[in-house]
Image (cartoon, rainbow, N blue to C red; front, side):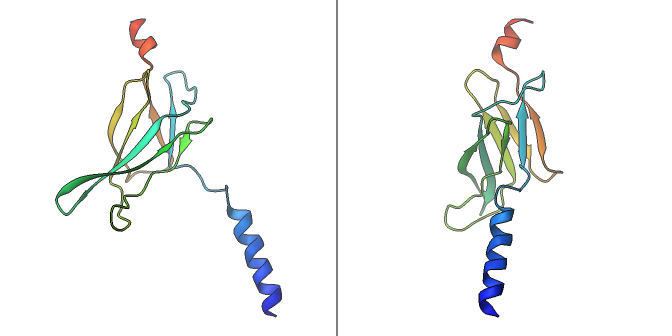
Length: 113
């Protein structure tokens, strides 16, 4: 019986890989996905502001929220998103419905104003 259960669980696990929804979707003002934007998580831990590892948006502008892992995993409270050629977006509260939709302003768009 164990030989039958383990393969089924493995198939179920493999089937779930890549199926999770993104935490964040980043676009420009026209709705075009922004690829390669850096998502940095931030938390206040023991009275100190700590930043996390970073993740990057994919071709669809999607990314997951990184976790603070300085000494142990901690909940990320905010994210900031940066990309060369765009105005940064800072202090986005992660305690909202996912995916969080973020619109970045591309600097060439600012020059046209």
